[in-house]
Amino acid sequence: MESAFATKHPVHVSFGSMEYRADEGRFYISIRLFADDFTKILEFINNEKLNLQTKSKKNSKLIDAYIKKNFRFKFKGSYKPKLMHFEYYTYNAKNEVNTVQVFYSYKLRKAPTEIHIMNTIMTDLFADQKNLLIFSCKNTEKPLTFDLNNSDTSFKID
Image (cartoon, rainbow, N blue to C red; front, side, top):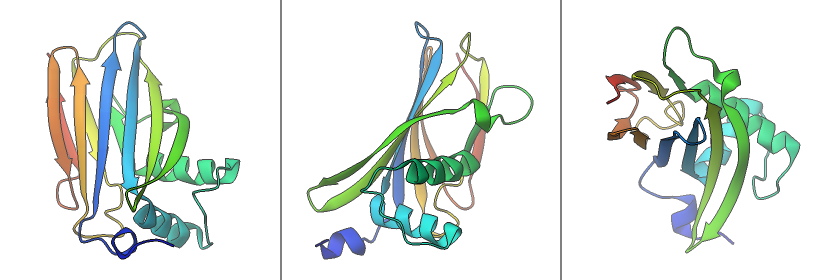
């Protein structure tokens, strides 16, 4: 049985990281969300009940489609969400707070000199949603906050 906090929490927030590993030529992206909120938006969009605790190809496909629509980045030109490779997701039930964490990778031959990031995760369900992201590449480490009124940002990378 879920606790009252797990089903009715006063904060709508996601936590993420986006890190470039030069030795691998890849960005690694991780996003953690409250499981009840994330399930709610996926059920609404897909008009069906879901149990994210049960790993399945269907759940992975629905999660991947939602994240790729709502978390995008580009270095030049247009967004290319198909190049963002879905690795896996985990369902964590610890300390009465259930979370879902998704993992992606993005192959890039060399580190970029600038980036544009758009993050609208969960803002289609909660007007007070905040999406926190730590970006790390070369000598640049930036804490970023996205919300309904501030869903994208661009900056140079040192």
